[in-house]
Structures are given as structure tokens and as C-alpha cells.
Length: 173
Image (tube, rainbow, N blue to C red; front, side, top):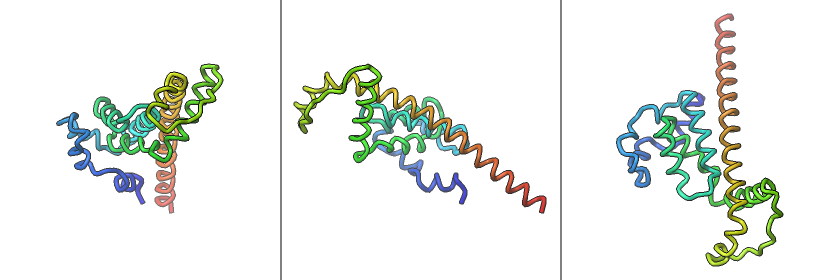
């Protein structure tokens, strides 16, 4: 099956995204055909931006990815879908690893706090964990975005080369 057709099947419908209440602020700019294009440049950039925003430690990651896609004119549904790397199941382990990574980057020993599942407990510990979490998350976001861009670009290129070779073999036979 064609990769583009498979992507279109997995990704949200453009009309649904255009009418989504959180994306209404983007207005008429959602009608730009470049936002819905599955060409290599647009798609690879959407994958990279989605991977970046997936690790940015803020709420509304999908809205940020969509705004970046509209502003920079790359594939909107791919960027929004990639944000779901982080989801309710993956956020706790990713946040923990990012916190440890940030503490290591800042040369701080990770805190030995006891987790309190309450807003007061989280706010009390925010000062101790906030900076390492932010540094670790932003570093991971940049690394994930760059790695995704390079990997997606190389895989897409490899796919084109394989298709070209198959086509050439068919013609020669």
C-alpha cells in the first residue's frame, strides 16, 4: 500500500480539524493546501515539529503544533498526530526520565522527594523539580525533533530509491 494513502487513513480528517473548537483561532489559514500536503518536505517537517512539541512540558501541545504548522506551512495533521507520542500513559515515565536527564545536565543530584498525589504536594515540589524537568524536557524536545527530521527524511529517501529501483527492474525485464 502507498505510504501516503496509509498516512491519510491514520490521520484526522482535514474537515474535522478545520472545525475543531481548539483550532478555530487559526481561521481561514486552515484552507491553505500546503497544510494538507503529503509531500516529503511538508510531511517530514510536520513529523519533526510534532515530535518536538510532544516533549515540550506545557498543556495544549496539539494547539502549539497546529499553530506552528500554520505559521511555517507544513503538514498540520501529521504535526498534531505526532504530539500523541506523549499521552496519559506515556507522560509519567517520560516526565521522570526528562527530570533525571535535566538534573544530570544541570549537575544536580535528583531530589529524593516523596510523591504526594495532590495539588499542594505538586506545588510544594515544583521549585525542586521544575527547573531540571524544564531543561530535560526542552533538551529532549530539540533532540527528538532533530532526530525525527533526520530519520524521517532518510526513510522517505530510502523508500523513493527502493521504488525507483523496482520500477527500473520492471522496465528492464
